[in-house]
Image (cartoon, rainbow, N blue to C red):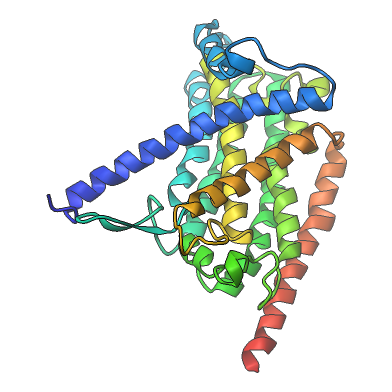
Length: 350
């Protein structure tokens, strides 16, 4: 069999994409269970523990509940857009997964040879991620508008304003890493963070310009982008019932629900890739498969941080949220870009 045949390569890519999506959706399902159990622990409750051993089958019970729930469509909704919105949201959340490198190149026996643990690698992968994730705001805005409900409309408008505002800070927080790396290829950025016993990460960068400020700005912006506490104003039940998805039920609501958690997973993968060395770590050169576990471990750390913050911090007011994004976070992100560019200019002149 000719493994370099373009048809076989295309087939392998499709298999890889499907496997990646299934794995991510399984992780998302158990992230929901972990969140419910951790929040219960923080708040002195039990959490789900009846379906399966220790509640391990609870995600599948929730899925069945969504499938068999009654589908309700508002009589005056704009039907086509109403049904399209959740599809846009989940598609925009899943598509960036294919460009994240989740491990180093592994040498397989002939005829396979070396295989890079990334589904699709190309030169502008970071731009692709930022472009696709920015489309997700359309799903939320259209859902709020098409439902023909004042609560949904207000939630959609809040979400649109919030996501567009914090997307500026998020994009600028990554410029420092791009300046240091000189590339938009995510795999190359991870490779450059090798050495120093696998700990030459961009957040500490012992031989360069540490991107600690950029990392903090990215982390705050990513939490706001995914509408999570303390930035969950678009879903503030005390004011807007449930926000942009108030009029959605059953599987359509499940798509929005999954999109939020998939977005959490993807921004965690981007933070791991750009700031925490991706799959780099001790002994990866000797045992390449360790890189996959390092990568997943770092992503799980970010997911735990999301849950911890939800059980700890109060919600902002909307004016506080917007002021913080435009008057503080954006100037800090711009300052980090200027500082990184200036220091790199003087370093290159030496």
